[in-house]
Figure (cartoon, rainbow, N blue to C red):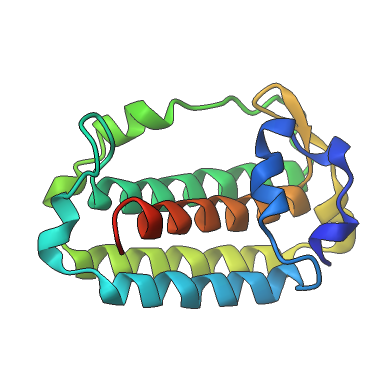
Length: 173
């Protein structure tokens, strides 16, 4: 399954830029692996001293961005699982800024973040591998809009690509 197979009705238009950033011809399973490789390489370039850097007052530190990626992937895993299993209750949104405020990222080591991201991503990949085609096309409600697990998978990838780009362009990583 590639991102070209998605219909715009499968996700909120808020995620359109994430979806557009994804290579069109690459399957979701391969994207999970390639994206893990990309983030692992980027994490390998970060100096522990750089974790507390923020490029502008009021912006997240590097370590907060990394924790945000982990938190969001966990939340989107849960959402994909719920929709794939036929959950009929709407899934609520979350305030990503509040999550960062309470994440305690400043107490994390780079190594612990690397390990956690790798485990979470492998878990995401295994979860999506377990879904049947029917489960991937199941429609649920996520944050006030329709969503399918396959769209959620591509949103996970697009979200990570988005933050990798920010880490490169604004944080110099």
